Image (cartoon, rainbow, N blue to C red; front, side, top):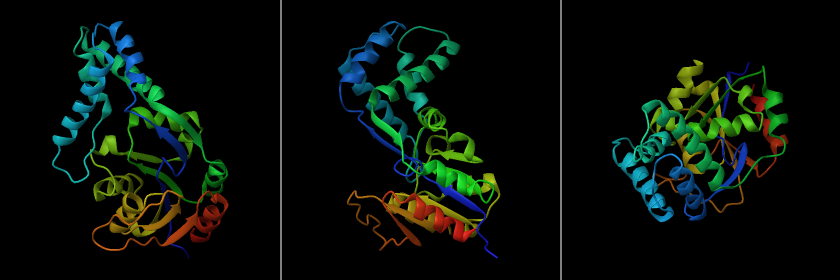
Amino acid sequence: MSTTRAVVFDVYKTLLDIQTDEESLDPYLFLSRWLSYHGVSIDAVSLRRRYLDLCCQEIAGSEEPFPDFDIGKVFFAILCDGKGTNSDLESRSRELALLFRILTTKSISIYPGVHRLLDSLRGKARLGIVSNAQRLFTIPELTRFGLIGYFEAIVLSSDAGVRKPNPKIFHRLLNAIAVPPEAAVFVGDNIFDDVYGASSVGMTTIWIRRDSGQGDPNPGGPVKPDYEIPDGSYEALSAKLLSML
């Protein structure tokens, strides 16, 4: 009898395809105008610099390997430059974060076959997500594409304060679903974050190999997934996972 009880997925470039650009000035031009209506006077160039500086400060404040932070803190700090009550700032920072995401997203789509894949696994294994992502961005995007209801637990790096391949983010998910690592499979596209990270805690790994020219960035030696799936073959991924359950 198989001991596999859980399947855990990465989000971006695994379930959703996305391209973003946080360097272009255009989004900041719009956001500076939006901010002017909320008591914050800042030009687009200064806003972009402040956003990037605040992100760097948040990262620098952590002693964890592969740290992350809640992007809401950055937008809250930007809104603090103006006037408003704390309750105003909390709701407006969430609104500003989502607006920022919309404006900096060049494209986003769900890979064909993802719904069929998840439907095939529903009820046969506990499903979870571990992703280097921001909750303020990712939960609305999973909801938009009808994915949120498939997953029993979702752990994002903005919640955990660390990014893959830090073992803490994987253990947080495994603890949430009460499944030991040897009974869980991780599916992702990144050879370092996903394959190395998940295998380092004892999970079985399946690598969706994208045509992105990824090398082996692990300085400790070669990273080998347990199984490899060709780019876009969600039918093959479904068959492999079902054979393990």
